[in-house]
Length: 225
Image (cartoon, rainbow, N blue to C red; front, side, top):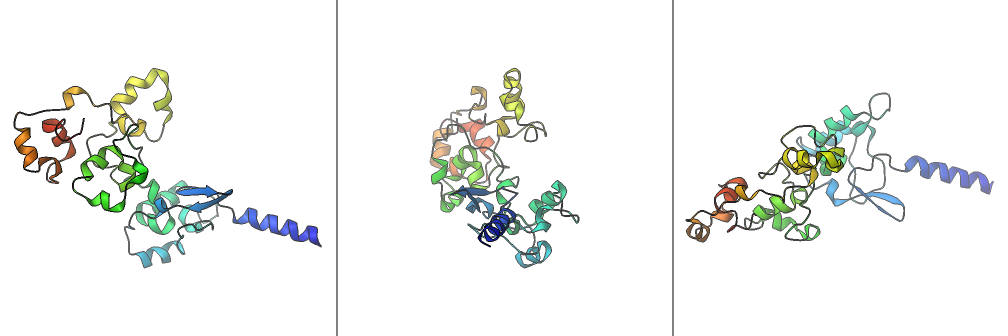
């Protein structure tokens, strides 16, 4: 009888284990949903998303996502279904960390520790230009800034980043995916004669200007190079 109970318990635990580990962390061998699974907003109303996908996941939860988040009508894993969930109701399905705004590498040598960035810092006008370049996936800034991939398939084939014969290609065309945002060419970093006055007037923190414009005209003075 005891052996039957042990087998039943083992099978039950196996069935309950997550198969989709996106936006999770592991503690004591158990996968749980991290805060990064929920740090974005749904495109649709939250209640509608819950109805659409059959429920929601919870912070530190250990239960598998609802099938509608990543499986088709035959209960088979479906990338199309998963991408639909990511594009419409990422918070409900716990997929915020793989949305375009959050799915990119941080700078290899950031000016600050990205793990210590707070939500308040993400909205601070002084910190934002720095975080866009240094810690974009913490604040959802991956689609902002001047460091972007020039070709669409970089994120799909990350082996490009590690191939010794493709280093120069990666630096030129896959800077965001391969983590080369910190290797800005000197010609991209300007220092206009008027920068001292512009900086005093708030040029570096003014949200009207893009990071690319700030780097082009006062990159050194704004700490962007």
